[in-house]
Image 1 (cartoon, helix red, strand yellow):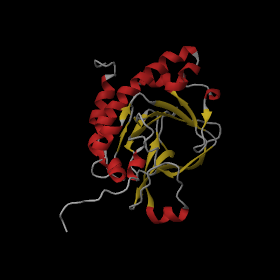
Image 2: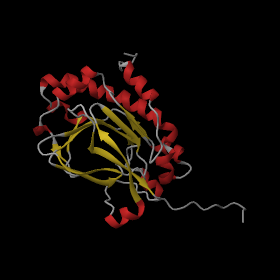
Image 3: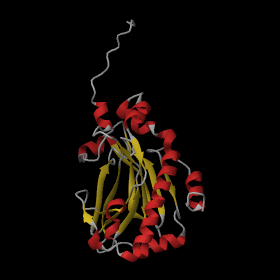
Image 4: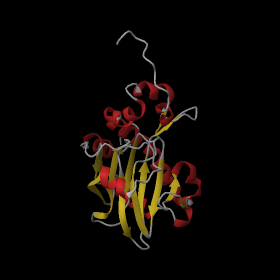
Length: 263
């Protein structure tokens, strides 16, 4: 481990991962966690009755910060460790993608986006959630919550082979952007401005991390998995502010009037 307690292999894997910029900036890292830690994650995955169903495509979810006290007592040390590790992972991923964050913030805030973010927001990196899906899985093309500069999914499959049918579909956007995740594009609009570009397969212990740009549309094709669970550990740095102001509100400000002499 390095001085922060992070396994050196994770630090090295993030540092050496190749960023692919199409259809939006992302990385994929196989065998992300040490094998023994990943095995414990599967074995000590929380029981179904602890999860709450969200209104987002019937996702079952647990927030490690808020819900850890609900976990079975003998599993809390593992999940506390993973929560602490999530802060370091989020910081490393944020630094990895930092040169490309203009892809997210420039369309929302304009050329002064860096100053706006520094003056009004901080980045909370100690954020991790568990999510699982069962029965019919499907997610329409969407971007993630605007307070997430980047988002990362650790696929927690119990099987050894890759499963594209359960993977994440990445869409190429033809000039279409949307800043929030509460919009479902119609079939007609999808036909005009979005095309499936590639699939990141659902594969055990594989991290998919990406810049959550206004054009980072992704989803899951419809598939029925019966009683099985599609499980994900999410690492997500979050923009926080002392006020209730969100980046979208900055983009709604009236335009500045240039009073210079240019004509």
